[in-house]
Length: 412
Image (cartoon, rainbow, N blue to C red; front, side):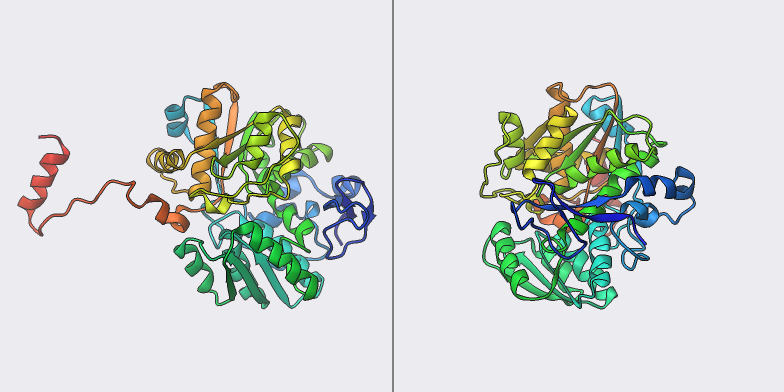
C-alpha cells in the first residue's frame, strides 16, 4: 500500500478521502495529495532508490498510488547534462540541463504526470481517460492510454500546430478540436467531466496527476549527488510544474534524503502569455488572465490554475520570473541546438531565453549551480523555426559543384 493520508485543500486545509475529486466543497480551493512522511522516511533511502530501475517509479513511495505502477514504466530518469558550452555562451559558471526531450515515449515531461494519472485511473476503475491539452499532454494521454487499454477523449484548441495534431492522431484517440483557446477548451472539459464518469487527468484526477511532476525535482537532486542546486529555472503554463519541482525538494529534505536546501526557483514565460511573470514582476499575488499570443503554444494558458501558488513559491525561495519575446524564443532554441546539440520545443526556448535575461539582470548570479528544465522535444514545434534557419546548399551531383560551394563556405 502507498503512503497517502488523503487529499487536503490548499486554501482552508480541510481533508478528504482519496477519491477522484479536485475542489474543496467548502471554499472551492484546489485539493492536493497529503502524505505520511514519517512512514515514507522509514521506507525509503538513497540506497534503495539507486537499486531500482531507472524510471520515474524509483520514487514510488512519494507518488500517490496504492499498488504497483501500471503505466509509464519506460518514462522518467532523463539525463542531467553539464552544459559547459552553453554556460560559456550565456556567461555563467556552472549550468545543467534537465533534458526531458529524450527517453520519454512521447518526448516530453508530460509522460511523467500521465504515468501517475493513468495508474490512478486504473485504481479508481475508470474505463475512459480524457484531457484538455495544448499538445504534449494530448500525445501522452493518447499513447499511454492506448497501451493501457483506455477509451480516450482528447480536447485541443483547433489552432494547435499541425505536427502536434498528427502526433496525437497516430494513436487513434477521439480527438476533439475546439474553436477556442486553451482556457475555453478547459472550461468545456470541466462541463464534460461533471456529466460523464471519465478520468480527466487535469481535472478530476488533477491532484494525483500533478504529483508526477515531482519526479523532475527528485531526479535533479539524485543526479547532482543528492544535492539541491542553487537555482532551477522552470517553464510556466498552469504553474503546476514549478510548484511540484519545489515540493519534491522539500519532501526530500523532510524525509532526510537532502541535508540542505537553499534552492531558488525561477519561472519563465512568453511575453505573449505572461500572467505569472507579470504578477511576480509587479510584486502582487493577483494573477490577471491574459489572451495568449505566442509561438510557445504549449505554455499558452492565459488563466493558470496554479499561477498564484507558483508566484508564492518564487517569493518563498527568493527567485524571480522573466518573460521573453517570440524572437528571443527562436534565438534560444537555435543557441541550445548549436552549443549542446539539444533540439528543444518552444517551451525550452522560453526557459533558456528567460535564464539568459535573469543572468544579465543579476537575478541569477554567474557563480553557483543552475539547472534549467527543458521539457519537450523540438520535433514537436518545427513550424516555429520555419524561415529562421539557414538554407541548405544545393549542388549538382558532381565533385566540382561541391567544391564550388566549399569555396564559398570557406570564404575563398
